[in-house]
View 1 (cartoon, rainbow, N blue to C red):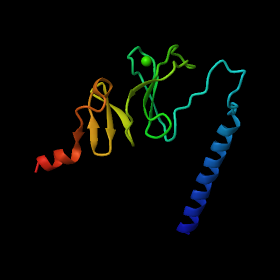
View 2: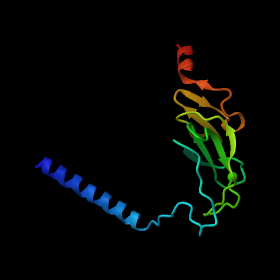
View 3: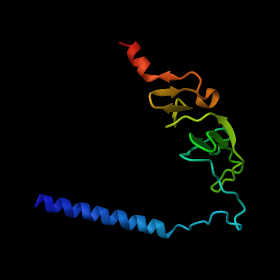
Length: 143
Ligand SMILES: [Ca+2]
């Protein structure tokens, strides 16, 4: 009886998820690549690109940083948000630094911090990959 209840619950959850996904998909409009009706350009960086919405220039709106550890545009790229608001217009990218695989950003004490596996880069927007803190070394030093 418990197995039957579990199967029924899982089936209900699955149907709900499919229904929500279908509803969201129906509201989306696919924009054709290189659409001449759009007054914008396509944004392409490269393989395995990883976007971060952050206020890099500290002007109050979210800019776009894209980390691309592969080809053809290896690097950490800054797309400045020039308009703010819900439909931002981004400037052409500026390369800020080299890329790192598995880069993640977070905020610590009001400042952006970057991390890769076992390494933390404090004050990332000022120093990028300088002054890394290796977690394994810190653990060994504390023994
Ligand atoms: Ca900004």
